Image (tube, rainbow, N blue to C red):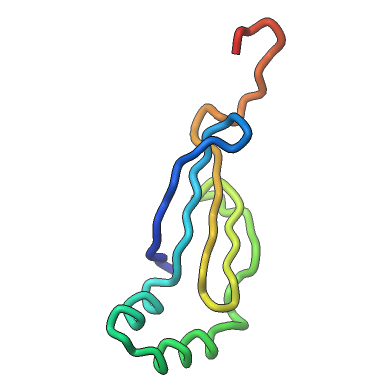
Length: 90
């Protein structure tokens, strides 16, 4: 499923991480058009088929999809997953 939303890069206790939050593309299109009742019907009809929480290998981190179709994903940016070694100056 394609999602529409926004991404942010920030430091989380030191390492740089990327976060994405959004909604399913079809839900977004309905909201933009103002089709609130159709949006509600779509969300209600598909609330039991969405994954809840998973590690997405393609994304590279945990992804949470709520029953309402909203999504939140978090991942470390490349090079941020290494633990500093004693005496390495990092």
